[in-house]
Image (tube, rainbow, N blue to C red):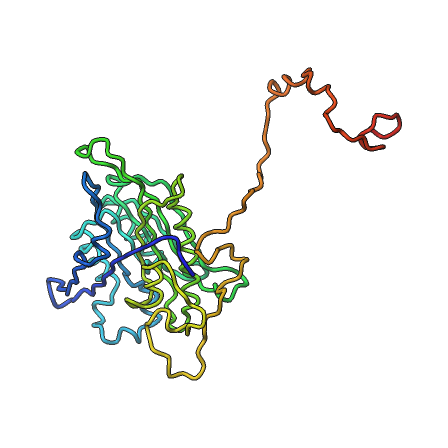
Length: 347
């Protein structure tokens, strides 16, 4: 499976500590990596901005899987405590774009969105399908960007076992607002995608199929009129480890997955000891999904026009006495009872 685009992303997590006034972290600097250097623009004015991606842990999910957090002090798991620390974190870093995962719907509408709006953000939210209570959000500063389009992405497909999960994504196309100091410099739009794909370490097939849907939407949104793509930033919780096949697929744009054990896709856990291992088969998804193995939507060469043209009365009257309409077309074949003019043929 090959993707037509190349992506790179950085992520980090932080856990507030109720016993310390300062949140200490071990930071890893990627600015000197070859991939980071290749993303640097050439000479001339540049539009610089900051972006932050954060899985904020939905309270509902935390309570449903409380056994995963037994090592945490109960006080720091309290949502009211975490919410205050999250807002302090956002204010401290003050990003121009903020991508959030595991955003509980009621917390978003009642607390997060109003607070972020007060901080100058415009926010978009997509809740997971089914009965799930959390989703993804993408927020941006309207002083830095103008929204061109927003596309929510749902991975659930009825009747398709490979895509029977409720994960979602969100893709925004933003137009940078060039500061006055850069004059009339033209800056291309920016495509920002955010998602939280399936956690299950054993179901790498599902993860790849979900990513294929997201990349197809990104390909559509980010495609320019000349067929090229505008700059793309992919954020999210991909439930995979660095240098896993899933990570390498997003980075390199290609993955030979046929025969690969499904658990190996994300590299979260090693299930090689198990006798039965689900292995990936090509093609991974049916053609009915409408997505190619290059992670692009299937488009018809000659799309049908679904709309009917509507002409005004004045326009139609121009052709009422048009001489060309009274001329017999060259090569017209008369069919008796259909196109002939004999009396009694029903014309």
